[in-house]
Length: 240
Ligand SMILES: N[C@@H](CCC(=O)N[C@@H](CS)C(=O)NCC(=O)O)C(=O)O
Image (cartoon, rainbow, N blue to C red; front, top):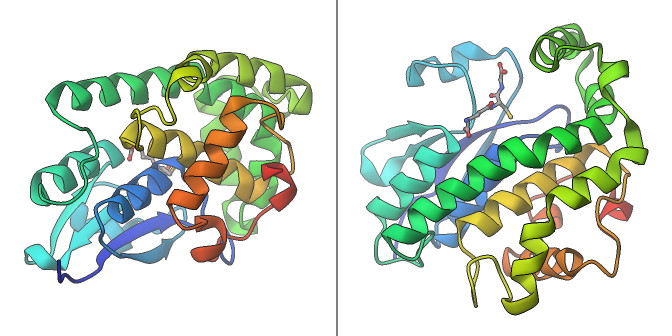
């Protein structure tokens, strides 16, 4: 398939640290479809740069193969790519796969992201650009209803995060990927969460003997070791 790259606005804090799990999921979906992501680094509060999308959050993609059509929101992006590029490898593997991926995204967002934030949010705060720190603190403290220092339990909370991923671990006893014998969007979404943590935190979120650890290695390989291939800077020891 000959095609132009897909532009994707992604949250970056400083040079080459891409911090949004949603942006990572969207980037993997583009790669999965055999398209090339053209990553445009975006910083918190640069609302003017994505004003064309009539909202203020990333990811936003612009598809030059389709007259510059833009789409925002990682889930909408996945659906757009699936519909627009049906002959390329599927993200959902059918309509029931689509609704199950939607369920997965929602379950992980509510069940695993909070314990993860409670583990690494101080690292995330420290990684913010100086001009964004106050704003980051205020918006997150409003969201989580507590001062960051109180909300964050640090590395001692890693067990709660691991526990929240038990259903994924159970699936991997019988299947190579959450998508079965090959990855589906659920795999990409979960990998996105690890990519963003890797960018800011040295905490080892997975033990080496965890089936999710070998799944993560397989995924990184399948997506061409994105932490190096895409120049992501981070804490390699957190992936060990
Ligand atoms: N549900 C949206 C969430 C997007 C989102 O919250 N993006 C964050 C980055 S992780 C953002 O753009 N934040 C900018 C802000 O809060 O002003 C999606 O899945 O795309």
